[in-house]
Image: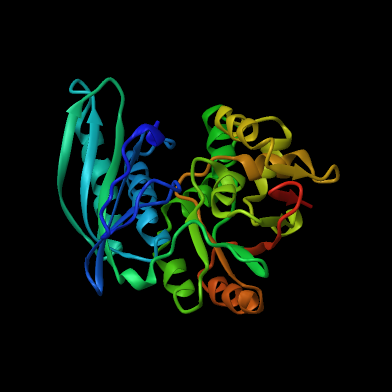
Length: 317
């Protein structure tokens, strides 16, 4: 749909929607650019306060994926008029606290009457135009680092049918409510060739966006960080329709070796909510970056490497 829209010809419009990037970037001066994004969706957890936290962390994540710092945020609210307004108050409270944790200002927003609840943020950040991360630019010799575990989509699906354990939901909620601010601050100390956050297109979908012509990614399935119970649920076919759409879209780009378990496959296609950063850094620095990220307390890992082009864009081993 976006390909049918006219291209913007403005030398200060540095990042748009040409490469499905995480946010737009517009240069104001030689040393200052603004970063803009928005995201909102319906609840994936029952607790309205936690939902507000998750939705806000997810929206803020796109700013961090660009290497930027969020400064202001606006609420986006869809809410049924006949529903208890205390529920909305809790959603907004959760969102507000995450904006404050990010060091940004919640400046207002807009609400409409709707048949279902939806919530999110429009976020504006700032960045030095010379230090922008984009979701393209992986180079052969890079390693790929994932800063959060996979599997929150599968766990939330299992929870909706009463199959998720309290421990699994606790891990999923911790992951979804953790700001990518802290991982972004770590990786900013190292040269970054490409960066994105893993959300609705799943790990493999967002990796596909990161790879340019002539590059191939080799993924080590045994090094993928994930919520342990998510693998069990995937093996029991507690999987999402969105993951299957991701799989169908990527079938011509991805080769998965036969020995890779089905559950791991599903984790790699699983859509994530407020997922981690996927970062491409020079191979010789990978262990240093990983050691620094490990201090944040979430499962993370070197999950693959970038090589010269092969028959398929992505190979999972």
